[in-house]
Image (cartoon, rainbow, N blue to C red; front, side):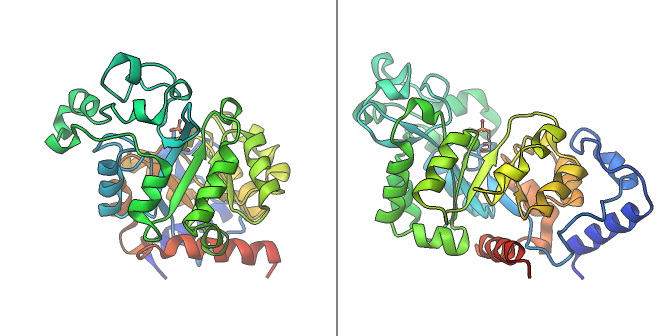
Length: 331
Ligand code: G3P
Ligand code: CA
């Protein structure tokens, strides 16, 4: 039995002792030792490894959503690199978290201030997406961050091709008509759709239920993750019977996660990937309660905790895909 399995087994033993299992984990990690795991949990000690998802790349150490950030995330062992999508005025998918360029780019105001949807790709390519990071985080500043650009999603696929797993979010899709179709067209162009279905090489996430339902309508086999804001566990649990009809997992805020939510998700064959988990204590508490992966800005902290239980190479995504298929088939 692995180190991680032992941790989970310990949790199960504690659960059998009968204490309540439904307090928020992230806010009280030290309490988990007294909080056993419910017998309803469908995950076992033989589960797929906990996945390390590079939130906006390695955004604790490098300017988010730049090649520098993705390269660093890969160096640090990310199972997935995350992309937040925005659509330009001329219909190109670019990778940026905010709907505006203001926070994370510098350059001519007419090009680098305001809404992405009101700028052309040519305008956005004049913006520096790294200098802000050096100013904001001098302890992690590097000269090579100056001059980083806002990548298009296509450029991300061209750079990493099939060597990486992608965790792609449709951001503000209600303001970007056609975002989903453009995403699927790029998956096809770079031969990623089949790998998404077969081995979760691409996961598509959104806070927008409508956006995920649209993708599901376009291709019911694509693996989708429903995101939730930091609402209570019970509010999320009430939606899971619906979510399981189109998604393979959920991405709650870490503050929403408790044992009841993990069990409710797993009972419906839904994986659970909380965001954004940046301290070792929070990570360990979530590992102990049985989450299947997590978004973090500090991948080295998570991979250090997982140690030999870290997925090897990019196999974690495939193992998760297989586990999901086994779960829904009832075997
Ligand atoms: O997608 C998971 C997490 O990234 C959601 O939060 O605001 O960083 O996109 P946000
Ligand atoms: Ca995101």
